[in-house]
Length: 57
Image (cartoon, rainbow, N blue to C red; front, side):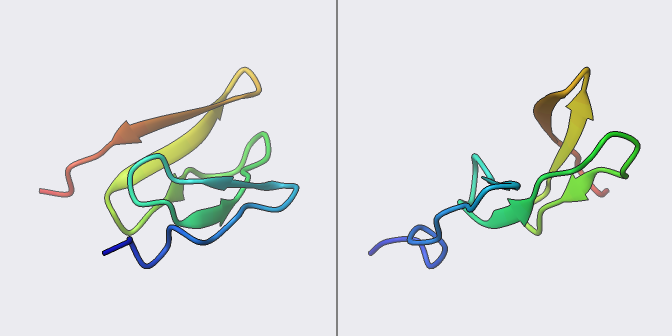
C-alpha cells in the first residue's frame, strides 16, 4: 500500500518532506520553521533547506 501523500509532487516554491512525502511551501529567509505533522521541522540555513526531527515531548 502506498503512502497517502506519495503521489503529491511539489511545484516551484515547494518541497516534499523527506519522511512522509507531504508537500509544503518553501520557507523564505526570516520565516519561522515549517513544521510537518510527522514531527520534522524545516528551516533555511544560509539559503539551504535543512530538516530535523523535533520531539514535542
